[in-house]
Image (cartoon, rainbow, N blue to C red; front, side, top):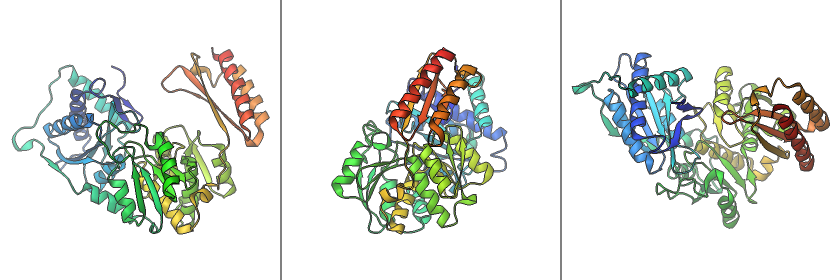
Length: 452
């Protein structure tokens, strides 16, 4: 059995890769591992369990709840809510564990299980490793130690979860959204109720699309991975802006009043300046990954904001923020973390703060986003090469050096081995798209020659 936990929990095709038996077993293993770590010491343990609206989430939720209760953990079942809502409620309710069932932006047949530690933070890697090891051990037949009688966990629905989460979101806004018409694309996902309610309570006039989940239509031609419908709706309704989430609403992309996309880098730039004005951008620093557009880096330099870059993945952004106490970080994909108000990326919170900046400044999102110019970016995947030699090949180093000299300060080269496939990703940015394509093509050829 390969490693189950990836960078964002356990994912796979529901009822094929991710079965009810696995969900139950992982939940029991999590309860035992946390008990051994002392998390439950001195009190009766409690877990918060939520899900997105995928049909498979219904049976997987039942399996997780059964596993936790059988291990002596009381369960608060919060139903369909965004991933950041489950993280927030885990902290707000003083729970020992949070469990979210979602495959985020993946297609409907997939699902996933993500565990949160006390406080709503991502479970430490070593605890995930231990859960996986304990699950594997008992999967082969080792018996569990099971409570009986009053020792078994009790299960109840926590229907106040939606209201608690929405109140939290509205409560942290620096100003109201009165006078703004906003189109929300909920991806037929987990935020279909929470996000529109939060925007309405904040004062916005709300138009929704993709907000009728039926268990089968999540992410289907809508949401942050398919912006065409949102772009058209914003223009049709004469809205000030549009906000798109993914299936579990931990991401946010935006559309300005003309129907143009505003990506995660631009959102970070707008929020960084707004937070600095409120003295909320600690150390005048924002954290992003090495895949952020060079235009974002140049804009932050021009505005006097320090940029710290990490490896690709929101987990690395979050680790850097927590270690150094930074307040804002994120990815080009729209996964934005505002650490003073959330323990993970929160697409609804991000959208609310972006809209609040529009309302407070009296400027359009298009104007605000123009603080940075997105430089043309070309990405080529080079398959079937020895990705382990990317950093040691002298031939490749020579080719990269020549490319960097040609691009100068208005361009950038990044060669990145894939984490899951035998390929190398070649990314080139330049002021001119033709130059970016030309340099990327030559570097891709160099990768094949040097590593093939």
